[in-house]
Length: 219
Ligand code: ADP
Image (cartoon, rainbow, N blue to C red; front, side, top):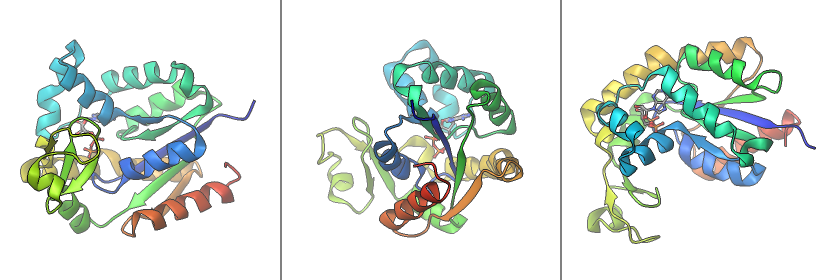
């Protein structure tokens, strides 16, 4: 059996983690594990978990470490994660990174990719972002799908996420600096951190990430 490939993708909100992870998950045949997507799906389904976290998500705050660690633990138990996982939006605190190390044991994280994008650019990307509530397709406010409110891929409603409003964007970026930026040092110390310029076109970013994965003999 091939070794498990567990990758962490770090970066500010709007750095392009979701876009890159969707592509990488296909390339490396490992599941894309986005805690934000899992939490948003729970909110949409109005499950007990969703009802508990809805207001935290809308305001741009962070859900408790215990709760997200449990979600990730459950996700890794699903059969498709036997080959590994591509973590997007997790870990986002040192506490979560330590819990992840305990969870994965020796077969731990192979690489942490830091998608680096200046704060001005992510702020601009987030405020113009619109998303399809059904399939998650991402548009810009100037796209026809955003103006008409209908997704051209699936016909779902195209909306602005509540946490892409200016006050919530500020709060999320502050939380990134305070809680998540220290993870760069955490993974650097372990020799696992690689920084990729996330301000380039999506295809160029994908190529840069795949080159790093190859250089490290991981794929
Ligand atoms: P973004 O990174 O752009 O804020 P995500 O889709 O990753 O978007 O997450 C959306 C929201 O879900 C976060 O603002 C937070 O409330 C919650 N969330 C997601 N992942 C975590 C996590 N690892 N720890 C705590 N809260 C999380």
